[in-house]
Length: 256
Image: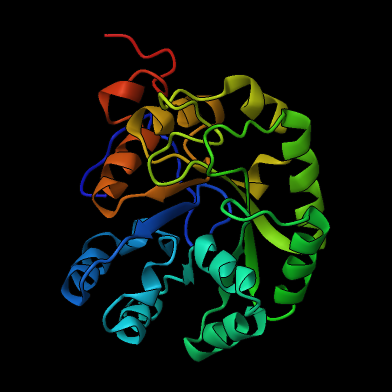
C-alpha cells in the first residue's frame, strides 16, 4: 500500500482460498492483458475466459501465457464445457485443456439439461487431472431452484472433487443468486451458508451493490467472482472499507 491507514481489514495474501477474486475476461487484447496484469495482478486470483469466448479469442495461447507467467491461473467458462458435452465431445474438451496447459476447469449445467449424477461423474473425471470449479444454478431466470437443491448439489459436487462451488449469477448478476432486478436472494444465500462452508463458495457478484452486500455479510475476505477487469480495484476498496458503501463497516468504535 502507498500509505498507512488504521482500522483497515487485513486481506489474505496470494495464494489464497479466502478473499478469492475471480475476474472475467470477455475478450481483452494482448496489450490490455499485459496492462491489466502489470497494474492489478496482485489483486486477482484467477481469470475466467467468459462462457465460450476462448473459441474466438485471437492469440489465445499467448494470452494464457501472459496470465500464467504472472502467477494467475486461467480457465474456460462453463458454457464451453457444456458446448462440448452437448455435442458428445467431452474427450475433445479434455484435449483442449491439455493443449493450452490449463490446470483449472469449470463444470456447469446452466444452459443444458444434465442429470446431476452425470455432472458429478464429469467432475470426478476432470478432478483427476485439473482443479475443478463447479457452478450451481440455472442461467434461465424463470427456473427457480429451491435452497435445499442448491445445498444438495453443492454438497455432492464438493464430494465428487470440486475444489470450490460457484453460485450462478451470469455476467449481468440477474439470475440464480439474484432476482432479475439484481437484488440478492438473501434467504437463499443464508440457507446455503448453514450447510456449505463459506470458503468453499465463490459468489458471482458482478454488480457493485451485490459486492457490497456480500462484504457486509461475510467480511473483506469473501470469495467473489465475475468481476470485470475495470472493477477490480473498486472491489478492493469495497473490501477494505475505503468506498462510501462500506466506509463505516470496518471502523469499529472510532469517533471524531
